[in-house]
Length: 111
Image (tube, rainbow, N blue to C red):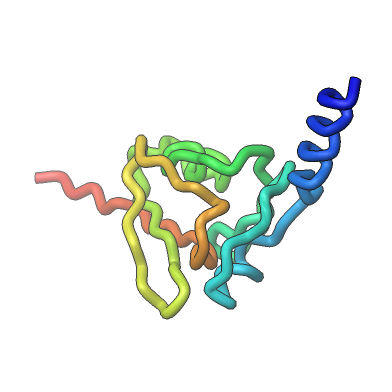
């Protein structure tokens, strides 16, 4: 019985925060705590996701940029650096330094 009690205590010490604002921690260059939900900014809108790892395609779809193949998405990192996120590239929202995301429509030219 003592072992099971010890396990519960360990799990309690690793409890998840309900919701974390990724941008708030990113601006300070800090790693956000583990959370049940992550609040992120894409362009000027706020969104909440219920898992720490998302793909570029999921972010674009969440932001209403459909079809996602017609857009690019970038991470704005602490310090102003912009990093392109591929459609199937995974972004870990619990990593330090992610401030927000920005989308750009791909230009389609005919001729």
